[in-house]
Length: 441
Ligand code: PXG
Image (cartoon, rainbow, N blue to C red; front, side, top):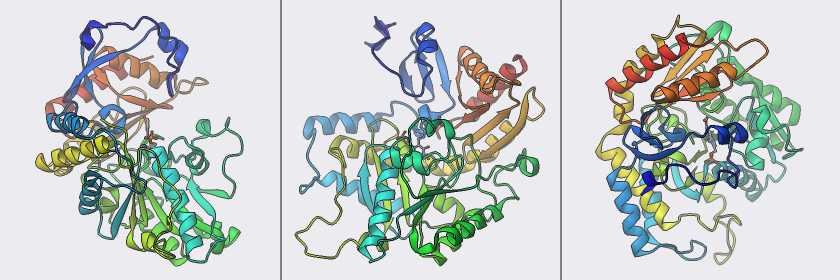
């Protein structure tokens, strides 16, 4: 009974991820239960989930079909290897993923997280070129302010300075495109901004600098989430696709956040109408319930490996838990839930209401920009001079007190509610946030 255990005895042993540990442990915030749109706190309060956990519980919390699938699979076959052995459920999930993916995405490589999906995709990119006799193509191009998880490949191509700077030299041979945030031209744009497609042309400069024949892949989030919701300017992704194709460079979309309905389509690739060569996913794949990620590749990428003697392993890569049966069961039940409840369409239908609600915060104290797409929104605050992040974190704490869960990064408040959200919840979320902001120093 989770609710009986109001406070664990000692908070010292758990070194918490991406957390101000000392501050948290002096004044802990604990969730002990969740259902649909709400968390229950240790002191019995209901908190409206404005962030789908960490952008992952797209179907809401403790959904019966997913819970039952996990229970059933745990009792039937808990674990089976996927190296040189198989189990049907992982194949079934792969087929189901290909069914909802953009046409051309034909294969699925399983991982356990977004970070592993990213590192897997980067490795596949380099090995793909080598398999085709272009072994000099080893460079990887990311983008400033990009978030691609926390493993060494991901932080190397990533562009979030705090996630990189204390971790040494990382991967060599990496370069970065400029980010696409142009507040002077684009502040308060609803949806995709007009200005900035030309920033994709910087890839031509990078190609000229290094030589196309040394570049394996470009990886970007089609919509940058973690850095504070930066949308692709109109035409930007199309231009990236054209330039990468022209130079034989693979294009990887990191869809860890944008996958599974967040923007109103299964994937951002469909939403924006641009087909990459690979897509990295995690989070919403299992509704966040069991750790699982997947890299989707085109037939061309996959088929390049299917040469050589048939008894040979084609790709020396994989994880003990790749395609774990319980995770696969959770994945299938999650996709069933999305489909049966029409949640991707629901996100698209609610998007205009969400957009209007968010932009009603324009003019509220401290607000210097608002950005949105699908069921994602960001409200950027004017930082306290000399004390960046402090104002947004104060908003987060106040919001939690008032019964809503938001996320902050720097001085940006990000929201990404479960796709089952009702209009009344949107009103509560935005109304409470307005009160919080008006009350801040
Ligand atoms: N790529 C992208 C685009 C992500 O957003 C990862 C990779 C890494 O996924 P894993 O499963 O290894 O964490 C992410 C993760 C936030 C926040 O508040 C975002 C993420 C994770 C935690 C918090 O913005 N994104």
